Length: 480
Image (cartoon, rainbow, N blue to C red; front, top):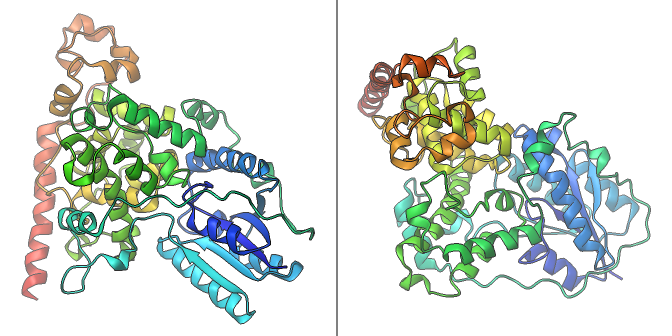
């Protein structure tokens, strides 16, 4: 009788799970496990993600129990946990789906070597991406740094990939006594009310993810996505990002279901834009795989000595708490803290404001998002912040400084989004709500709302001056 371990990681689902399907089909007994090794990794999950993870694991275990199986939970160094299980049980194989963060690659490589030394089969599959990062390269064999040519090649390679089937049955658990722990003892839920309030906005787990996709496609079929995705006051995006983050749904499932009505080569603009956004996430993993240092430093060396301000604690806190005096910024930061999520257009606005108007290092913004976002993929979060600050792959030009007032008027014209998240401004008219400092002195005296913390024009010029340093550094590097 053969026995395998299946190690769940960023793939907390039973459907379209190649590694799990292989484990179910090829072995007589199966031990499904999850290891909380977060405390042993530098790129740790933030509080919001850990709170979501608690409920996602709970949901996955409920699914497994319908197959008379169970998710066994462990806490500690993954290599030690797996070795311990192998010593207590006659294990023939350990199977998992690949992760692509630098630390995870190193961890998995060490585990494979340890298993090989014990003559235990180690098998890894791809459940996270359409294509492996090493499969998509330029003609000269080097990786892409710009998204559009990357997208073209990925689309040519083929995105119409059917998901793999869900196992019809799950092999039984062996009877060995293992040192697994309870979900509660993983201590994923922080000892404060914030995560519970935040998670009330969400339904969690594989079924919830599939329902979210179905509802999104029924709402618009992706057709209106291009027009509505930039409007924070409407539900114009899929809001699948946290489900993707935990692998409750796969990008292959999303694209396959989206393409059921229309083939890729016949897509309308909205649906194609939606699929491109799904692949942008894949591009983030691609960049982190090929340029692993980007997780903690700028991609380009000319940014190494960028003149970020140093005494920033007061301004950083105002930004974090949504007290900047710019309504669209404050609405976004408050939405983030309340829900663990922020509309993508607003993410770009608040990131530009932090990096360019406040001249605060992008890494401080990335760290805050990583702690508060429920969809905080290390790869996507890093790429997003480097894009906004101008120092990463396919980045926004250094001279592009988002004006939060202009953005607010364009994308939240009636001020609905601002009124929802900055209720102290809800009674202002549609003009003043974007620039409350222009309201009459009588109206302003009744507002419990701060004055703008910085002058947009002056800080824009300061940012352009600082970024001119980068241009000079680039020229010097090219000369040298």
